[in-house]
Length: 281
Image 1 (tube, rainbow, N blue to C red):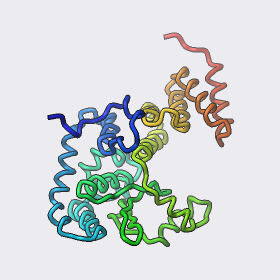
Image 2 (tube, one colour):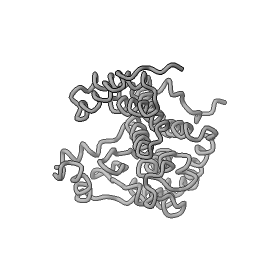
Image 3 (cartoon, rainbow, N blue to C red):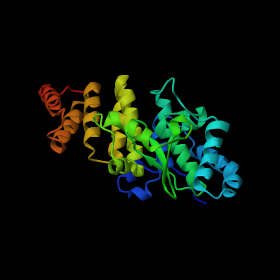
Image 4 (cartoon, rainbow, N blue to C red):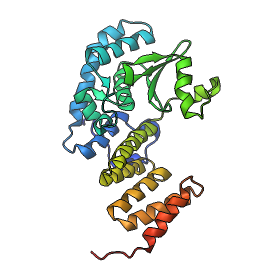
């Protein structure tokens, strides 16, 4: 029998419709770049163990919010999954195998644990690409139940959501229509890209340019013409001395985004790298 949790191939991901893009296994594919001996079946089994522990209790509950409360109680109180408040930018918080093993993560990785467990129990939990911290949402009779996976799955009210969004919207709190748009479900591709962009940021800040280039390259495996990833990979290539790759990526970035806020700086980098003689190897 074929293992349903075998990892996908990077070369096929760009061709998949979002609904066909596997969320958990692709997140583990991302982790395999850093942990090449990663055993995907092990983490699938971990998830299923969480699910089977909850199944009888959750099936006996009628209301979705109460079902979700049981899931959160098991994950965050009994099993100890928690937001890493002390080392938020530790790259292990973005690698799902490490999140399962350490029971520590960032908002988006903890959300993925919640989503996978909840969906296997029949709860239509979705991610939300909220400004700042990633959230999750569950439809309920009178609207949405929005929760914060980084803080134990705590439910968030409308007023708190507006205040959380305000600093990212020029100081203006979103009205009802804008907030509803912000709370739209995040497509799988957007979730995976956000994980990779988080990793790129961590590695670029640490000047680990090989890993920064790799993270941007993986974004481009999901979205081949994602302009920011082209810029990020090009700049990382520049640091690594790969001038041909840097020229190609930075030129493509400017072609796709000629009016970008950083276009002039990127043009200067492109002129600089184009003027340098190619070294013989």
